[in-house]
Image (cartoon, rainbow, N blue to C red):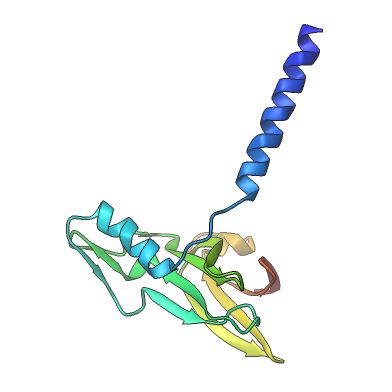
Length: 157
């Protein structure tokens, strides 16, 4: 009986944890939210013009936001969110109810936007290992589209 109660308690804890993780708070404006993060972290901070790119990335007609941590100078150090694997990018979708939902964080070399057959796509250049290549080989290019709040891979080369 004691063992079954322990299993039940563990199962309930997992259920509660998964339920909590599934719910994410909306952000009123990703630019303000992300800038506040760096202003709290850095004594002196600068944001380059590429810090936030605003455009519809999921074809719903609402203007979304992509934040590049590589466009930040924190205490004299450029690209604090960058390393040999690239820079951090956070993708936010604007929702009809108001506010933004962060759907992805990725470490990328670069991010470009494309339109194919009327679909907005994101072309992400990443470390070669994401395409099962060795260090020093050609970077991986993953082209994705977003439907709803899900990122789908369209092409990987």
